[in-house]
Length: 287
Image (cartoon, rainbow, N blue to C red; front, side, top):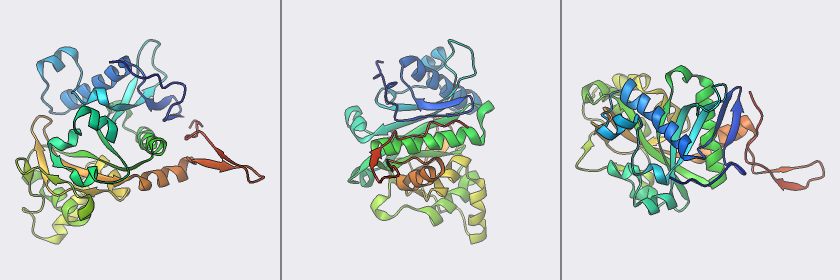
């Protein structure tokens, strides 16, 4: 894989102490992200690896070559080591056209999202090393999403998010909660493909039980909901990864508004005389 050198002008570049967030710039860095994914998905969780994945110790698929890979890098690790401790994978509209489809299309009919007139972005393969699952790391990942969205003028992002396990009975409350309170509007509503579709609201009765489902949601899904995220209609059992998937849809204005306010990520600034300048799309302060 040959990647474009993006070191001169990085769409994403920020630091918090010894942690840095930016996009992968070399094949070696992509491989390090894939190795982290393998560790988290196949060793710590219950995903089923192919023989080639086991031999290489990396999680990979055909979509990787068409994606941008967001990295959280620990700069305190030794020289020569690519210290990737967190990652996300992004695919925008043109990249999906080159690839032939979005990854999500295997589980959901996303034609309402593809019909959206602005730039769209699929995100997925998010994971963080167990030793780095802190508020600082998660804040950096959200900041990376915000800066990337601003840089590429992304208006809508989506992707599959997972509940642990494949037992529908165990996941009935969070699924029903998502369906009843966070179903996407019709114009933006993905629908699980019929061959894999599982109803989200068929196993629960009492409303007080449904509300308890919010407490059972994984932190990542709760994070999307705090940004006014929606879910598609229907869940999908992913036996390869050992999860129950929902399709998340978020308007990036909610992401960039929150992180622009927090980090002063602004497209333009004015000096004391009212002159307007385009500035770097990120604030490189540390801490």
